[in-house]
Image (cartoon, rainbow, N blue to C red; front, side, top):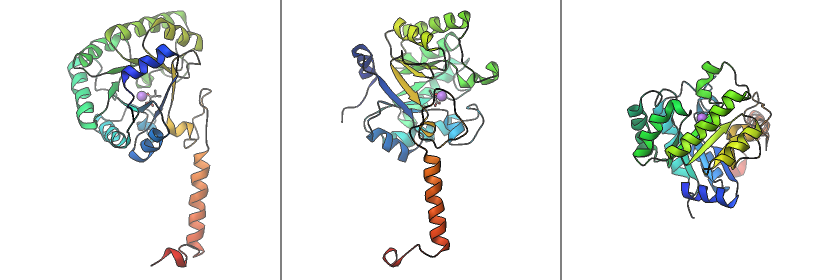
Length: 265
Ligand code: KIV
Ligand code: NA
């Protein structure tokens, strides 16, 4: 199979071919997602929420991200694998940002790293890129800044924040980022950003005018239940499916229906 590279993604934007991206955090799920033909797998720090049960993405550590990343990379044959730099491993210290990224590339064997922010993290972005490590940006609702925002509501609805976001996107492109995730911003603004830069813009809650879409796999499969933002389309109710299967198993065990004659030695 021909591997997806950052170069392939930029060609897709040129051709107007939309980029598909989903998260994965473990070997078994990543294998299914890769076999289905996804273009990009994000080992997101959303693992902090969906895998570890934390309220925010802030607690997850670099070692934990490397564990998730290496598990995913072992499963993947085709997709580009991007691993999130977790909170506290790149902000305000470009040397630490570089060291963290090098660990992700060497120990998880990822294809690229992703980090949140624009001008605030530009020095870190430059230093990581100068080591030859591809960087994906992330603007708009950046969940590592939840304590600054105070809410997970839509970002950049006002002119000032919208202008800053467009400038940040151009800054990240200029620095050499290969793509940018835009999270939960008005669709018109996201379209404008996608038209203003040559690099692919991947949206989540950013409308249809961008170059690709990303969702958290547990959300789109309906494994998580409580989280229901407008942008989330559920393709399955896996919570109910799994619960039903577990209930049948419990019932079969209790009734001694499992195992039967053919299921024993
Ligand atoms: O961590 C994550 O899952 C993400 C996506 C929502 C873009 O950053
Ligand atoms: Na993330």
